[in-house]
Length: 228
Ligand SMILES: O=c1ccn([C@@H]2O[C@H](COP(=O)(O)O)[C@@H](O)[C@H]2O)c(=O)[nH]1
Image 1 (tube, rainbow, N blue to C red):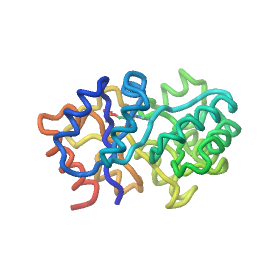
Image 2 (cartoon, rainbow, N blue to C red):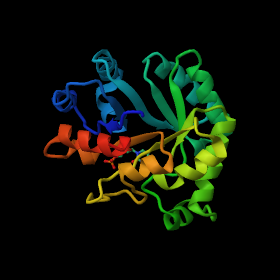
Image 3 (tube, protein in one colour):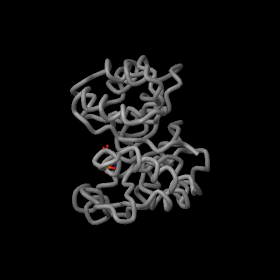
Image 4 (cartoon, rainbow, N blue to C red):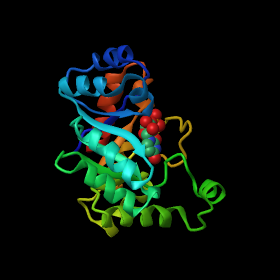
């Protein structure tokens, strides 16, 4: 069972170090735009040197040539996983994969953000199919482009497993404990539901980072995720 991925949605190195000091084990953490744009590659290298696994969540979305070059740079960081937006298209996803060649970094694609619901997708993107159909389409495209998996919600994980196989990664944010607040997320689920639906990884931010006792919340989520 993969460790829950903790979203380090902080803006400074000090906040990250203070947060990580509450744990005495090796973690799987996510560095997103907020942190990377302010602290850059240096902090990614430091977190790696502390022995943690890293998902670098920068959601690249640009022309293929630009994404390939950017990925060639990111490949040098030695992170475990990174991503693009599937909406960037097949050529862009293939270019991203090429840029990462030889690095060992897993590449996944964001399908529909977990802050999107079906009505919002219709209204904002003018995509007039069901949300599940759109997510499945992007997942199949990502698989065809040779990617390792996708970011989706727990709700689509089972259908993606059927269409793309058990080994294809289903990385699912929007995780909340049963009494949790959805905040800006639209497609949420508990860690237990994620396990039952076939998520391969869960991404958890605020349920841990804003908790009064982050280490205890992490333990609770890990136990629920692993079925203990
Ligand atoms: O579809 C997506 C893709 C990425 N995220 C990221 O995951 C975390 C979730 O944070 P919570 O506080 O647990 O809601 C956050 O870093 C997002 O950028 C996502 O939520 N949905």
